[in-house]
Length: 385
Image (cartoon, rainbow, N blue to C red):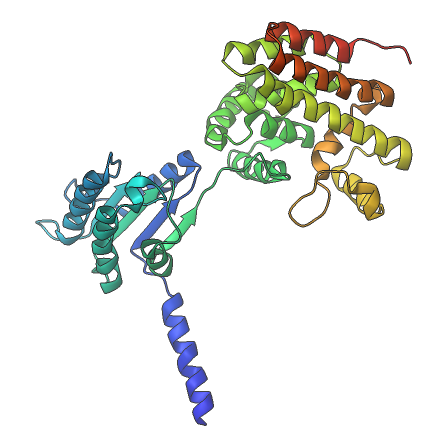
């Protein structure tokens, strides 16, 4: 074999060796703490099946400072290097490690020095009868510790959807649909949209709410929007969505009730205005404009998106965009369903009223509840042309 081919073959062999993950190292990280905890617990239960308390050991990774973190790492190393008295496998779970992220404790020299001990042990390789599980809500991916874990361990990441980014709704709906299928529940498209919007980023509530729905509908497997409204608990994000939804339907009483609910829970009036009312009025105006100027309207999201994609770029430049540079059509699609409840001039005046309400909230001493109630009444009262 020519030298060049031998060299390439050797490189491929090394790359393949590096790519192979150890079958006794498991890492679960991400901002969705509920899913991280559940996945790590399931792994610990599976790997520790049939083991006694000496064979399945949990180390609490919650530290208050770098010295505390160093002690926790020391206990973890001791657990990994101490085999059960009667032999057999051993599983060690470093649970909820809060010192591996980008924090004051995580960045301290004491913590980093302690983590080097675990890194060195894992690089050397644990014996086959020792299994190590790590779970953490945040991990600093710039550090050597994570880079070595990523090379050696089976890493699973569970992050909450970022509701501040466009297009988050589809990710939540996919997750809800997958979890519902495990229970044999079937969502109508409208119901799936509603369920996802009510929960927002609170994905750890999904199992709880699906279980409630499962019990509520009994033998029936199809979940309707009415079922969801009766059973599912409203998160903060859900109330924000419901305000916009009720606003679109011109349900004045419900909007006022939901605003009272958020104010009672300590939400700021400016937050309600800018987080729910203004975006919904703007989306309704955008949807109404697309309907009147380009006749873009459909009860099917994919069809709506295709129609929007055919428009010249300058005609959609004012719409919110996703990372790939295409319009974030989903919120506008939802608003288009109710756009017929408003005229364009009503919505334009509505945005002006929102600006005035914002100024009154931040520059005057008027009661915030009164300001919001007056705004909503102005938005939903039938106006002459």
